[in-house]
Image 1: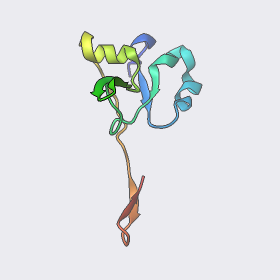
Image 2 (image 1 turned 30 degrees about the horizontal axis):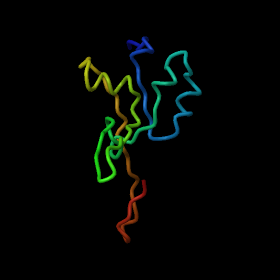
Image 3 (image 1 turned 90 degrees about the horizontal axis):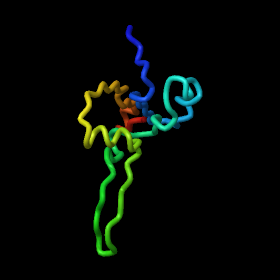
Length: 99
């Protein structure tokens, strides 16, 4: 297996707290600024500028600026590994699911 070795080109996200990724890797294999908490189903991918009656405001994305720039301007090839969201079996009587 080929290991990804250039830490400047590696970004890592987790749905959980980012400390679980920082502790085992640190700045040795991943830059701390490239580790972020993100919910791919609900969070904004990029920063958005919106306007209302009070003027313009920004909805910030949780993606690091460097990754946002790659997505918006640089058009680099990306390899994305995703561990898809999961749900546990719920109660068949109530129809509720656990997450």
